[in-house]
Length: 420
Image (cartoon, rainbow, N blue to C red; front, side, top):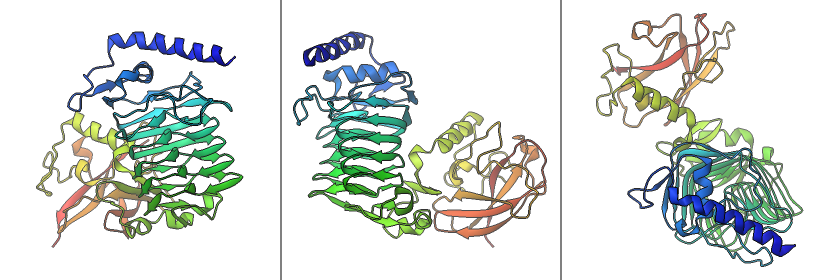
């Protein structure tokens, strides 16, 4: 039975490898010209083409893996489950998610397959960055994670959501690490037997910094809110939510209440960068992976709104309204008024809280919100829009606002004036 299973895996690899002659969606695999990944076909081609594992890759869109239930890691899978050591080809290249997500990753490895995740093993010199793993459902035996089973390289600016289950070395983002993980987080549910953690199951000899986790964690031994077992690794400036995880202990990181985890000073006091890396949206969120911010930037570019990087009081069309690409946390114009910063008409006195990410270098300039129920410049005016500052930090300002507009939806931008 064992030989039959290995033969089938080999045949699948052969079929996918044969398609590599068509290339990916562009690029040549160098640092200056990485292979471009735009689809599920591209990602599967990478997984099956081990000769490319030392090359450079960049995603140019979200990739949805719905409809396929894998039994081994998509990229850099283990080829001999009878051995406890990794027997496949490690990924030693650079994988840049480019602010995109891999959606609906489903792996059912059973009780025989190890090194399970989008990546089975990231080797020394390998790097995965700027990537979201969204709504994964991953389960197997040893070394199981949403992003990777085992990390010997570098993982940065990544996050994972969904559910991860295994036997030993089970983590929401990474099963076990000997490498580096920084500026990452996981919110998924994690369960297993030994070495189970919200972010990383086991820190063998790795370094984890400026990371957090919030998902429910359960295990029989060595279970922790952030990390299950830390052998000789180190962790610094890391946190986990004691309430949502259901655990008050972790072999690494600092446990906080939900309120503390949703307070910016918890993280800035630990040296986290809330100018270029993080902003608060309930919990900290990576700027590079905030899809609303990305969408809004694209929308501004399509409108031809200038960058206004130097002169803060200049405005795109002489209307006194500044460019949110520079100032705002990022709004996503939507057909339905449900997002936090695209407001429904409100009649009660409580109003709506609106949070903006403040730009660096705006000393001497006051910013305040302005409302419109249309994107026409002539419609940008108060329109009964009233606000008051209710909270302010070095990186965010929160307004409590109400308005009397009765349209189906509206948009908010920032207006600026020189501080007298």
